[in-house]
Length: 457
Image (cartoon, rainbow, N blue to C red; front, top):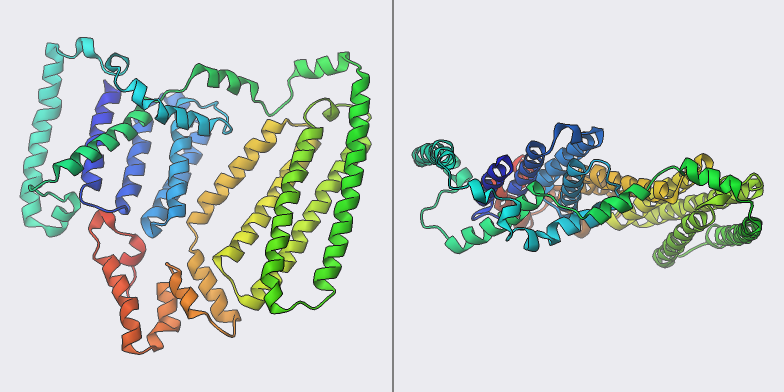
């Protein structure tokens, strides 16, 4: 009964938050409401350290969306909510299975919700106790709340705009919002995942089991030696190729003078090569070190070759960093060029995790899961940073020719841009800039982006 009370309350709150509103502050509030619904309907022993770390991440992502309201922060909120609901109901679930668990939980709604006996106490619904609870817990408090909302709304426009009480209601919109809210709250409160997923989860471990190690010691297969030698030969050849590529690339890019027009195409070509190289480097390590070669005493040469392979790919990352620096110096900073730096950072993190996998003899599950966690942490951390301000500030200080048109296309640099450039323009050029800010300020309360509400020019 507690779950269904949370469910119905959440649906009512969803309708109140989104009725007659655009996406804005209301989505952040609803995200926190979803977290509260999960917190109230899951056992306390499921609220592990991971759950609380995800709670902090949700607070940061929801705050970023309330402030900026951009698609990336929306993605961070959505990803965190999926992780929260899965981890709160299944604390031991691997992050590798979280996307599948989340998808199955939402996709199964159409089959689970119509079967009322699975989630609604139909047999005890029409008892005297139920009627008492309906009257004393719902009707009386609800009637009192509705009455005072009407009274207070008539005395305060701001209060009325928050609850958006409109007796000329759009019942089609209310019905749609009620259905959507019920779908979301049902999936968060009445979580479900198939037992097969739990069986797969039990096989995903960071460490090789003792039974597996013991079986390897008992089996002295000659195939292991052939497999080890094949891996050694392969890595030696790959190391030679990537070393030759790095040398020739450095001679080509830094030993000859490039024209400005060629910098962009060359950088993108190098980044594509780097993407393929890093992915293949990690894949090769996962292929060679997925089992017996982690524990074989004769694998010393193989491990040294693997570490050399990782080191050379790290050198390739560094070379592309230098090339991107050259590009930024010539053309200035943009979101795409920041994205190159971000990818290079994630590539370095992937190579470091690959090194730890070999050194500590971990499974491929260990490597992939931690790479996903690093990517997720980067997403949540990145959404709270005002990249528009950083790009604009850099270009103002270090570029002789400032691209005002590009700076205007960035959404969250308005104060900096106004103080340095727009304030010096003629009134007819300032008008559109100021009008856009005023339009944002006049949004309904729940549809607002807080960045513009605290912007005073």
